[in-house]
Length: 330
Image (tube, rainbow, N blue to C red; front, side, top):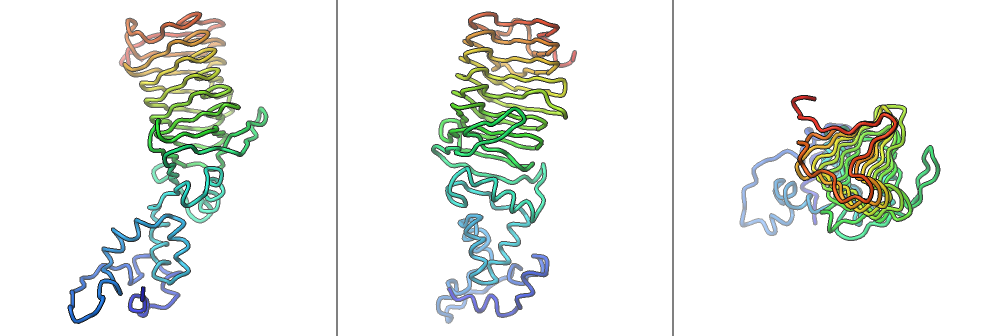
């Protein structure tokens, strides 16, 4: 495509040194169709066509590589990158999920990602195999992707369509979000985290060799909020420890784990909300609290919350507590 008409009015300095709003090529203007001009829309399509139909077809990598073609694409790169519009697509921008953190570290050095405007990683349909390992305070975790930056959102296409074959390790980072996927780490934990803040939406953590979700005692505030998630077919569904750890589960299911469905100890706190909450068919206890661990259930006492577990549906020892409360009373 001939871009001479679109770039001839500005010098290279207009692209690198000025805000996007001052780049004249990105200013919307009315273009009148002239039938006497051959290939008018091919030589210079209206900016609206570029902005709404052509540029969205390019991935983050495509647009970055196009910067070397002409300064026209440099202006678009600056606009989309600064405004955090293009996500990182695994399988397109990077070959595998193992390459994600390297790109995030590079781009995070060039702009700030925040709680309200996180770095978005899109994981398509199919299996995404984690080949890397993660070293935590307690040792090495195989087939585990270590998260090395805050403010990242991993988004799949659904529990039944996006499958992570491996786990995630998070230590000392916050605003890490996982949505619409299944995580299976047959060698270790599904998600292991400490001194971190994580949110889960429509995620299934199942078939893990260790705990589906594991939070050892932390030295700073550690939180998890999980909504419509499943923790199943692992050693433990969820194990949390420590007075600085608090977890909230909304309409989540904990089932068919070889040990406990849920276990809170060392003064950790768990909160259970939602009529669809269920803890069942676990090899040991359904809900277990010890060492002054606390599990608060925001459901009426007649709700069938924990049932059909091999040992106890509810078990407490060493100062642990399990109680049902009304939201307005807590």
